[in-house]
Image (cartoon, rainbow, N blue to C red; front, side):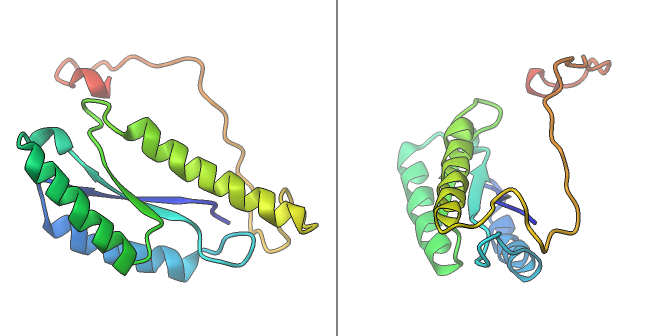
Amino acid sequence: DSHGCVILSQVDKPETMEETIKWKKSVDDSSTFIDGGQIPCILIQNKIDLIEDQSKVEEIKQRMTTFCEKNNFVNGFVTSVKEGINVDESMKYLIDLIVDRLEKYAALGHDVFHNPNARHTIKLESNTHKKESKREDKKDCCK
């Protein structure tokens, strides 16, 4: 009953890229978009802030583009959660893609709010009361 997927790897640990193939296969085998197709899945390589050489960043982006095409990810992004690089852009891309597919499915006369194959429904609400971390050793990005 998923509408989208984000699979994460670490740019400083190349072996995690190969692990994403297993995660993608697991998602594809166990999830179906409401229109019957695969759910859109993006690949994110995080911790790009650890790469200081811009030419290496461009090389990483090129390799990831090829990797995404070969392994059926709808797109790939390099991000830094710590620095706030490409996080919003990657999520906006995925959300826009999901909304576009839902609109196209609805335009064909389907009810996008009721999935007869759904096993359960989850209601997500934003939490307006942000809890402060009691741990002093956490980084600012994790409090």
